[in-house]
Length: 486
Image (cartoon, rainbow, N blue to C red; front, top):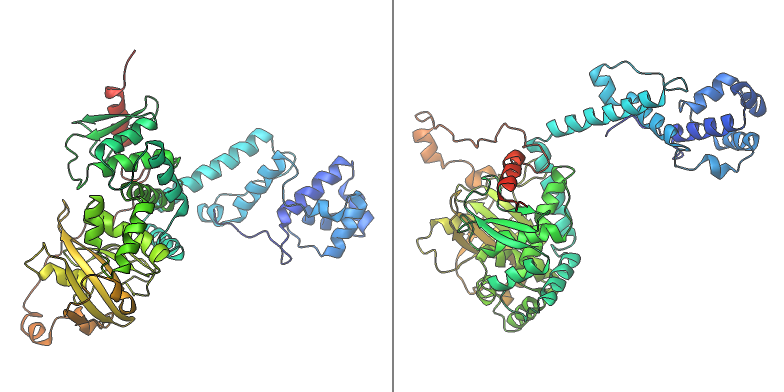
């Protein structure tokens, strides 16, 4: 919650300080006049100090501590002296902040005459109003900002999460996994080890991929796994959320973090770190690194292999890398980089939905008739030359390209480095590919009017609730239908 600061220049929280002084004064049966006389100040000045309206000097605080017969450190403690004091401080901060000001709510005098139950009710009421305002503010702008912050965290640690690798290692050891690809049987063994039974149903709520019944130890999955390129993935993601102790997301950023963690752990189970790092190090030694080979060795979809390569490339191979998933319409769906490549972004630093340069591998690959053979290309950009490999995959939302790239200095370790395909990108210069060629523009600029197909969520706020986008009523009715009955 954003409120007016109550911190003095010296770092002292004046509200907490004031409540501590009042608490100690009243405990000694001293009046404001008594304390004022002891420190050579008027009672009104003491009152301002206790109400957090005065920023005292340390010399004055030393006099107060002496008068109250406590060490100075007792006054400077950062915790409120009592539960009531904590509530008074919280309400005072709220009343001095923008929430009350914007709502034009008249302030309440926070003193001894305010009953404890009324104080408690006011604090809970302002917290609930703040929560509702925060939910209503869950706009696409907030989502973009949360995505940018999460991507910065991933970049800072090279997209490698050692605690998630440890979770995966312990689960695989628990079922005696010998290494190599994770079979569907082994995936079911992990669920059983955690106390879950699997149930494939035709009526899974449309807004969900899986539903976990924690009360009865059941995981519900769709019959036939429609829309999934790998039947293990939704199950492992459900297991991951349970193993990681994910609770109700506090906000959209928390929701995104949980999703990334669940996806990461699921991939770490399908492509275990120990086996994958040995495989990749051997391939690097022979200068034949390939996302396709990693995919085939562990029997996973190409996108899973590409993601997993970004987890391990920098930590185990010393290779900086970037990843892109681009829609056939040319917009960036998701991406990661720690190699200096500059993705298109908006003023908030968000990249999702931004148009990708037509000269980049991720866009050129859509123009090819051959979608079986890997496509390799060098691209000269404003931030350097990059080599990239890309493939196209179909989905219910259209075709996407999945690309992995590295700076030119590291291409010597990869299959496909001998490609002669090369392009140059001048983006974000609009003359590179944002503006139509002059000849076409002259012919059609005043003779055409395209009707755009905006996304349905373009102007909408993000779905609110415990799990954004999930119809919880539908989920609860589903669980009622399927739960075992005594």
